[in-house]
Image (cartoon, rainbow over all chains, first blue to last red; front, top):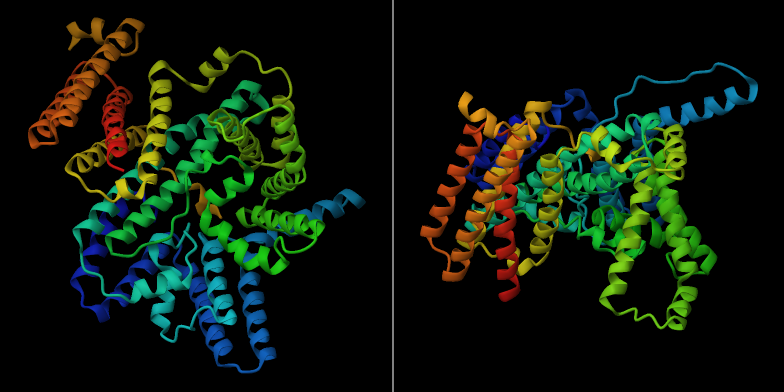
Length: 483
Length: 94
């Protein structure tokens, strides 16, 4: 089930009704049942995979906590990592790895090998696997207590708002909240509804309307022009942000109405003044996961420079792979690793240059320049992320570095009219304003009548855009579902 | 509706311009009422006026044969006006 479907409009009020009407002891079975139902709507048998991952991590955490022997603790931790990551690898990366190896072998001896298993990629497997891993590692480190109640733990893994596309929650934040007895509160309901309205605005009004232009270029790489690639890449940067942060906003809003506060996942990433800052603002729950469970254990920056750069590179390479089993994602992650390393290597040199040229690095103009520069680098990397294949990456980059052709012809071929251009530009302007207003927590938490009315207008805009989308083909799934 | 199609058809340049003029006119009216609401303090009167203007604007746009894209454009412009004032309000009351 996806948030922008008619089924969800029926499902969610029923969930709320049960949640607030049932006594405390019935709340977790209810939430667990509806969370599993939410997942099973898509593919019922794959619920057993969640149950398996849940059971393995649940038992392991208890065994780790009860073991007084360090070797045994390490054994149980390793066993969990191997099992959980093994399941993730099998379903997500087996065909990718087998395909890559057989391709290389075929190239070498001219053979015709093919090894492809008929596997379905379980929705959200990367998200819930990482969530269970963080729980087990935290128990191993002694940062959190092992949960002895299987029901509460199963709910922590499968809580429906964040099950399929995050945020990747930590046990310290989510588990105690799930156990608390929440009553319906007007302030929570208001803030939650506002968040949901903004999330739907991002997804339906901005991301889905832009998607048509982006797809027109990326799904026909052979016919794309330089201008088309530039426009589609800039629009894709907006689309993927709105698609993913829209999902997160809806998830946060859904949970907030129930009195549960999920972690923030985005903080206006395109305001970043460097790639390093971009990663502190983009998919925060994943970035902090990699920081805490991969980067720091590798040594972080408390080691030699060479080792520090190696650590950065590994983290971004793995981050790229986490996003998908395709060489395009590996390249995308690698490029971000290279950005970070080059940024760190040239920092001193750049500072000297600014001093020599008497550039005030504290000025507003400089900050704007840095933001634009970072945005261009990020947009370029999105080409690798969005391209359908490595072959398409080659075609797109070749065309990008060739004459761009006519802008007017490109716009016409992409289907831009005066009205659609105005709608696209306006929706992006409004998005930045909504983000700016929402970023100020003091304003966002104020439920004035005027603000409620504005949220009502946003909801109306969403309804009209939804009708518009339905008239041309219906709602689309969220991009991050595939990860 | 036939007698209106020449002036208001959204598929020809002339019709599109007229539709856009209607969109901009209603959006400006909505912005004006939003300004009054902001200037004289929020009240149900202003909110009701805006709701009526929005309802009338959407109805007129549908009647003159505008598509959902034009209706969406009107709503986005109206939202822009409201967010501008909300933005200003936020700066006044940090």
